[in-house]
Length: 331
Image 1 (cartoon, rainbow, N blue to C red):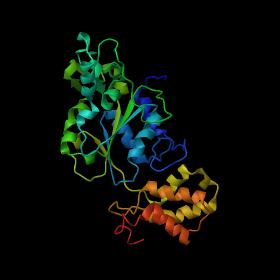
Image 2: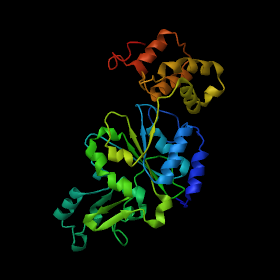
Image 3: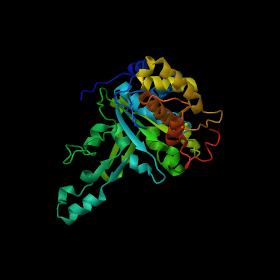
Image 4: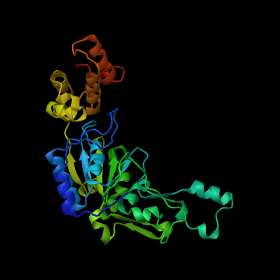
């Protein structure tokens, strides 16, 4: 992997010139390979502000509006490494920093493999994703000053992608799934871009020589839970509205190039799109991914939108009447 440093001006220009791309792989479900996205002017501006200030970019909006898929697209566009952390209700902020593999250490002790020079925690230290994003060199050495006896390798969260520049995009997805203590535990690490590992007496930091490679942290929230005010203050915040019918058609054309040459098919997609628009309260019958599922069926099967078969397909892909009995009463 060849990595080159990039000045801030270079990165800002890349953001300004970002193209929507074309799918590198056959689209299946909610797969996020980062090869395609339709960035709006507001998104481009927010990305530039986050790069300039070094603040996390907090994207808020309803599920299915395209928040999470932006991060991998930006990583590909900037040539950065990509890391992804999906928050759950039992996530701990420590998970993003480091952890001690206590089970492995206990096994080594029981097997008499724990020698005197291994009593330190270095070999049993597992760097977290924020550590990899901040300083991959020290993460690879597990914080040791010299060459690690058991080097660590960075996790791979984006297939068929090799970083061409020093720097990283870290996605912290659905942060509102956790309680306020998760956000509060990240105030200092995300705000100062550093944290201390007491077990090995080591400070993980970008360092002055790595300021240009400071990671871009993108955080998403579905607004299911209010985030602490102190946390929000440390972020650049951009609400992402649900896509309009026009934007849905634009997204479909990016994912399915056949729509550019098949007017009849494009006409049927335009007829379908308004059913998936978000209303003024950012509510929609279904997500953009489900809309794309229906478009994929349209591009594969020669089917009429007024047919009984199409009504069944809508039930299978979108309405899901057993689970959405009330939501889809208006369809």
